[in-house]
Length: 564
Image (tube, rainbow, N blue to C red; front, side, top):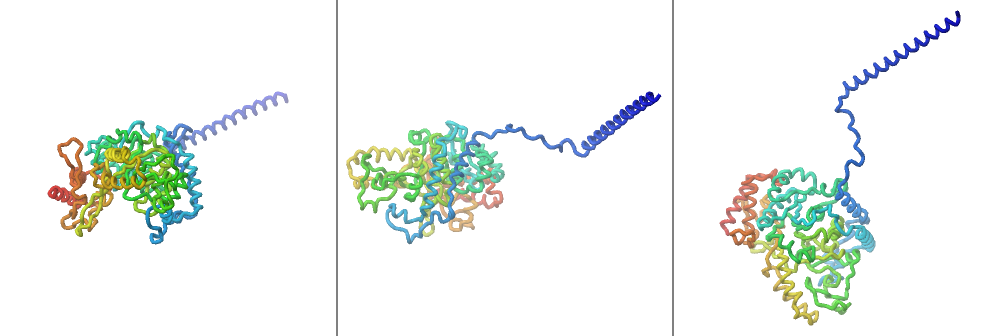
């Protein structure tokens, strides 16, 4: 009996256990279901956290990786000194030595400590060793050629005028206008999406070329002249004509790209007004050996000297021969970088080293290259880099033609630099200098006498060599700027007081019937048509009184056409 009761109790316990289990599971399921409904009601599906990205799904472009490496190299070669402002300290003019630009005279223009020289040399050796020899083909389109400018704001407007002038020569080369910052790019929508494409031109954004990593780190350190170096890097062209946005082509650049001169050298530069004033300390920093006992040129013209001869100068010569006439030094004249032609495939290291000089330019290399003379900036960085890397270049021998006007006091005011055609220049240089057998047996003094005569006759500013470009750098062809200059603008008649470029005209090689082009009249016709007839939208004029601007432009067109 007791056994039966125990079995019954056991069955009851088991049954109760099962019931309790079912109840617990039911409660748990109901609770979970309720929680799920509540979750769906309160937190919609679209608010759920997005799935994490798959590692490795996004790949950095090869070109961005390359540029990250290049800029890391520049950073690792940063010059570390206590006071950058005094690293290259100019000496007051009255304390400098006078006379020919000998080594002693150049050294008297700036004070540079041995510690600074040592640090700069250390980092120069490092960057030169670590920079690659060439650009990878992922950074440009092989065989392509075109024109590159720097735009943004006012410079977008100026580059537009420059492109119109380029097209007037008959050139069909594509153009890339580099926009330095994203903010500027956003403001230039009309310019980039509508105006430029109609001219076979396009905008290039630096961030697209170099990638976000580079731009985030370096964008605050790049300004002014330095953008030109970046423009050369960011261009997709292999063969580049770099033009300042206020520089106007007067001939087809295709003719030069197709020439033996360009093919043989891969880089063509143009002279500035002044002799070179590169500090002798730069050559020490860069590891360039200058033979201070051998003169190999007079100004920008080579002397015929024996390659076996190690010295040809007396003690008296040391006190009178310009430093840059010596073997190993950069030849005169100083370089003007408003235009530059270069092959990225053959001169990659030149461009990369010049970028280094520009990145550390304002406080250091610009000062070393100019020693306080006019035109301080990027202009000598390209030739200096080519000299260091041993990559060839040709700098024109013909002097600049200065365009300008006579003011009310009959004083000449220069406004533009006319740079000569390199093909014509080189032809004269070959015939008059390189192939002139009459100088073979002349002494150095006799050669110099003859070269002086040639310089003054065949290579001076008005020798008749055709112009290639006209660099309108001051004042620029900007109505908003011109209208503020009381010395040249008549407020009552709303026009300029003078023909700023005189009566400058140049041959029309585009095939049109018109034989000559009146430069100034043509530019104002372009200005009037763009702003007042076609009403193109430029950021530079977004806040301007366009009624006044158009009155100015219209008056200029009428006046220039009647004064022809």
